[in-house]
Amino acid sequence: MHQAGYSDYMISRAVELVNELHQRGVQGLDRFVRKLSDNLGNKDNGEDYYESYLDILKEGRFAQILVRNGFKQVAIEYSQKGPDIKAAYNKRTVHFEITRKRENEEDDAIHQSKKGVGWISPYRIDNLRSTIQEEKGQLISGELNIVVLWSDTITVGHHQIEWAVEDIRREIEDDPDKYRKMSGILFTSGVSYPNGTPKQFLLFRNDKGDARLPNRLANKLQSMTEEDPRKLKGGHEDLAAAMRKRCH
Image 1 (cartoon, rainbow, N blue to C red):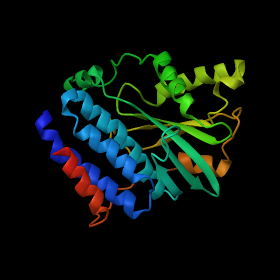
Image 2 (image 1 turned 45 degrees about the horizontal axis):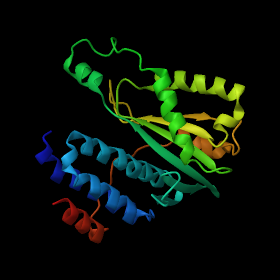
Image 3 (image 1 turned 180 degrees about the vertical axis):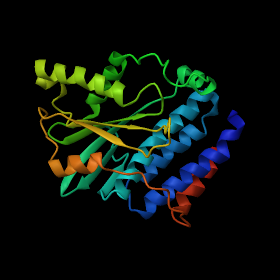
Image 4 (image 1 turned 45 degrees about the vertical axis):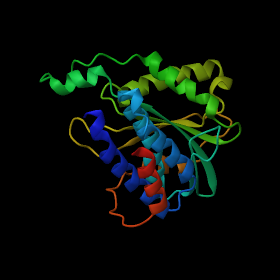
């Protein structure tokens, strides 16, 4: 996809998402749209601006998943500092910090190869663990905090995150304070390789954290589904127009 071809596709995709979030009452869309449009318009950074756009878009897509699965009072980009999203479920407020693992050169090689995925070299587990550790600074003391790891690369799947979490669990045993603000890790994959299976969510709970996940909330997080997008008309036309104006 060439840089000149990004604009219409990216804007259309973002406007459709923003429209649904608006209709479902998600708060904080002004700030979210500004971040999206800033990256849509920043073509001087080449391919990086598209990846940055996808990083931010994942926040919106996760907010979309939350409202579709019964979470209330969903707010995105609600604060200058802190987690990306907060929401309420069963009278409890939970905060989500979203981080995305991008596609890499190995993905390109796999897509072009007839060998399948059996030859993927293991993703460095310390890299995954470091990614999770980097998000700890955004978490709020005493609150329910979930680090959401969204993988858009075939090289980071359930097995890799399980290995990383096992290392983290050992760290928690040795030093519970190190992850005390983190209530859990929620993993999902943006790729449907190899057989188009529906999106699934894998939850790891930190039972030694300051705020422990209630069972009902934990069960909801693990059972969430990503429904087919509803065809929306109208909606947040002022934000859509503002986005188009900023990006052309």
